Image (tube, rainbow, N blue to C red; front, side, top):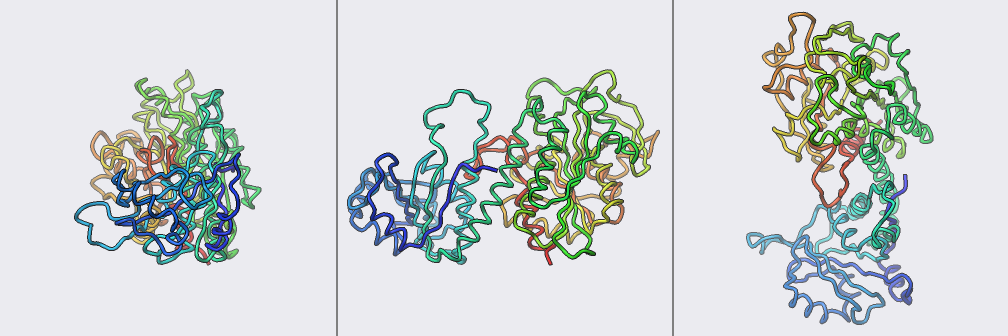
Length: 514
């Protein structure tokens, strides 16, 4: 995957030498330093800009810049520096109640995104990552900073035939100066691989459904073979032979045939049970016969964000050669309302043998996941399963777009996921499950129905899925609020967020590697 930013790690000494060289007139150079409360600078940054200190203070006074986190000060043609622009970015306390606290800025991911945005598209910059208060882990801070910059620089604009001048300038080029360049380089390189994985997932979510059919999604997922991932693609005939009538029922109204994609990374012990990730991949969801209202239906091209996250996670895991066994399963379908589409009231037999009354054809994702979960349990016998799906609008009502919903039959797996979410900023909130909710999906005519009514919609959807996992440790992540259309942030200005890629990669790294 190509990225819209380039990061080169330098030592402070090498950065100072680079600043001593004449500036290329065809490519003006920007110097970035970070200031805390009362314009406090790190020792190396202070030494580099000493000739411009007076200019900085005068400009700060005029702009009322005090180093507050998120603020910035731009100085053109700074005195004594061979750069066209000096950017001073604030990392200090953010309010009067914090005025006496020490300067801290632990979110290097966000800081990297903020900095990339302020540097601007196509610009060349030297960034002195020398904060007033040094990070506890400088090399990791540098990696997170670069990752934030890469993620912020992402754009999905390949279908635009006309672009503004500032959209034609190419990638940002950053020389990132740190105290220990040798330690930081490997971690920054790894962060680049993570960025590629997230960008892959974002692009899949952003693609229109007339481009990204189930077959095209499967083809793109198969490109992970270049990283050593084993890929198997099941067509409709193969799925029918396995009895996947729940999944196939969702796609039977579409001209585009359904696919099941199995991605396997074998980096652990040969006899070690894998951890499995299962992704809902509805490339477009009209709702079927229970058709959705027309308003914002175009957003339903993103109803495959769970499958995109699983694909991105397998990319990240394989790219860093993780010492773990991981299986990813993608259920890829299109839900359309033609004459062959399934109807409300139909009863289908799942791969597990359990029968399902289809009350609402717009509750289709759980039908896809039911057969995908059964498949991965029967064929790969995983140690644990995590499924990701843009499953219910109800999760948006409950959590908005700040957290993904977590449902699980296993406390240990839930705790591991929650910790991974906290570490990556892809946060989770666990919901209750239990018999009282489970009985709401009982059917008069089949073993279960695919909706449990209006109340507790996200929970009853999870209860439905739990009927297909048996005793396997399992967690369901409802990412309807985070996987697509998520709010703009320091690290994402794209409609598709790639949410879940870093979370799953961190889960494997912290808990499942040998």
